[in-house]
Image (cartoon, rainbow, N blue to C red; front, side, top):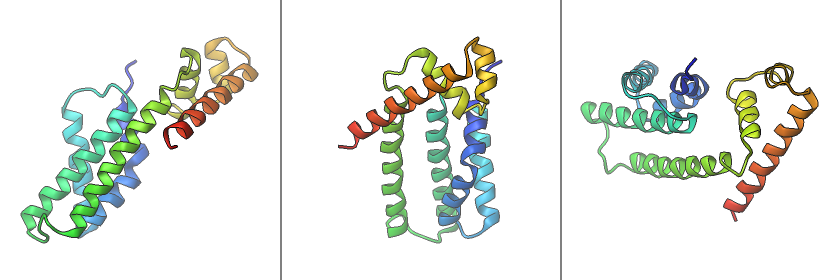
Length: 160
């Protein structure tokens, strides 16, 4: 079974993406259309290699679609403070995505990375993970705790 990073990222970020589109566009319907267009355009393209890549591409494609819609409507100019502010926010989001990727790759063992992904992305219960990996529930919890601790330490180092 292949993982569908795009769909899982879209479902997870849907509310945030909708708010982003609403800030740019004039109506809820426009925002919903832009959100749907962004998903369909990415769906037609290549497969995503990670959830972080899918998150980033969803944000960028949605932003570009909103700007294209605004250009067509000629409601705001590209020099507008609002668009410049959104560009700054997007740059900050790009930086955050790079930091997040570094944190996720923070010297975790393969087992810790698998357990972390099962818990956070696939939302599998500890008992089911223990069963799948042939481990005790306590061992799964300990590995998850160690993964979070390493990620937290790496994040703190990045933000000094």
